[in-house]
Length: 468
Image (cartoon, rainbow, N blue to C red):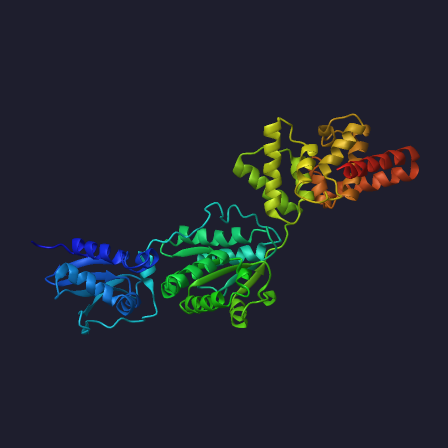
């Protein structure tokens, strides 16, 4: 009966699986392909010379047993090893290994430190597909980090930003940016292997590998990754064994031109409990901070969230949220979703009152600021006119005075720029805002009744904040 190489190797795998743990089996045996059977010689294809040497060093006895079970005492293995050529293609070269230890090599393997075999193995990058550059809002707070991320995504391992260390407080988008780099790479550079892992998961994997006596498998698996993203690197502090293993993985990847991306809640120099040799390597590339977003960026984040989720929230509510949730993007988005949920479940209108109720559950104290929109509503109500009239082009004196007073209060009680204030009053420019503020001040200086009106409105705004 003529035996087929696929059948023989399939039977070998069944016996091998019973003798090794699942991780070792997936790492070192699943990538092997049977390519030929000549009498008692089974030829298998392995991704690279390192892979071949590892099998011979750690699993030769198991291979010998399984092959001879199928082919008899004269059974032996021949290896085809994929060799990368100058044009980045792969060609097979053959090494024959007999079971009694004799070896013959047809062609010398060049550059044995290159490990291309990972491209033949399927790896789940562990990335959230929603984390992309398109959904990452750029502002002054994150421009450097985002620009560096874009550069790395275009040429991983080929820029001076290796490693790229992104640091900042909790909830400012470090993980989003790091994963956006990974998602961009696997989209544009399909031959690159990317892996995202939290430092906590990385540590747990090491613990399990030690328990299973498979730490070498673990290390060599990580050393074959093209782009390694490690989140919250600060949690490796005081974990001596984990740091030692990560140090060797870091060195091997960096020396082979692979890309490392790390996130942290503080810059490398402030990482207490971290080995100095690791800190020095973290400083090799670029360290970029992500800061709390400014008001305009917070507004843009909320508007983007509305589009993504198909939500509809009044602009004055968005502005109110942006004023009062300043230091955490997760909280910012959480408040928005909570307001939508409350409105839907309780059949309430989405307004400032509802926003204030929800925000109080997220922050200890609502910021003592008001919005341009709330000022316009107060002034319009006081003068018994619609907000639309304040934004209109009409030159009717009562409306002009109300509009100028609104601009005056907006300049005094918000941190909005003159340009931003003018834009909220029918697209007027900053010079109109300056003129309006001066006109109101002049009128206050000459008209006591008008001055009382202004002070009354300021008092109402302050009282509304105190009530919140």
